[in-house]
Length: 76
Image (tube, rainbow, N blue to C red; front, side, top):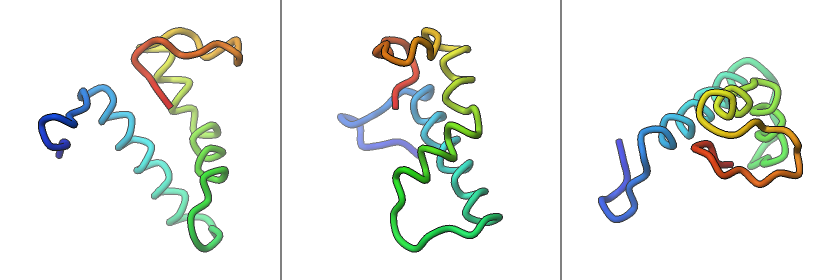
């Protein structure tokens, strides 16, 4: 699946988005989660999973220092 042609995103970015959704779905299936949207909780799950760190290590600049603005292939 991809977005309509003008709104296409690269495979690298869609893979990261789908990996994040799958990671969060696994947590929802195995842990008690609050009702409704919880962006801070989702951020915590992604940080704990190491998904973004691994993406930066493979495709982008190092995730540290934390004040750096990402310029590589992985975007939040």
